[in-house]
Length: 213
Image 1 (cartoon, helix red, strand yellow):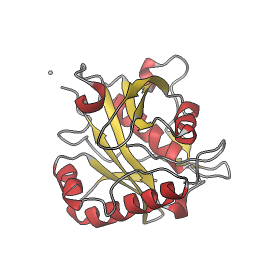
Image 2 (cartoon, rainbow, N blue to C red):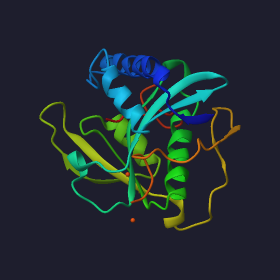
Image 3 (spheres, helix red, strand yellow):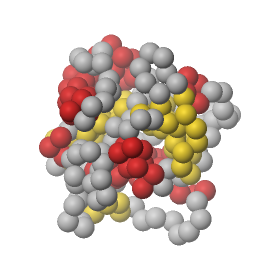
């Protein structure tokens, strides 16, 4: 698994992955993102160094967005977190533990920037995705109504230097058969992503997803 900052040419691929994820979520009875996903928003995120792509065996398998702050959902807070948005996987890569591996990459990347928390939001009325993130160690911090879309649940997890217990290795779960995939850092965070200032199938035990706003 290789997580890298997105290039301008990645915008159509990211939009395709997000559209595919939204189509799947609709089969479960939920709405997610607009279809087609606005490529101008993705271009904006790429310019700011906030959009990332995930490659597996030479194929783009997932996309995610990382923000340094998120006042719309979390209000004004100290610069102690990275905010994870729009984590979406291609359906062909569902069920392999890839979503969990990406979350661990975000954790380590945020920790390297000296940040204490990984924060995210997801649909408040979707117990599947909420349970998925709770199994990954995220704690529910409250709820937020979004009149333009849907109500969300807010979650956060401390990065590993701020948690008790041994420091995890650089190997993280990456496949369903117990193998591991090495996480290769994508280089320094983008200018507005994680630098500190001076933020699959329907999730069931043993599978991974990655649907958040």
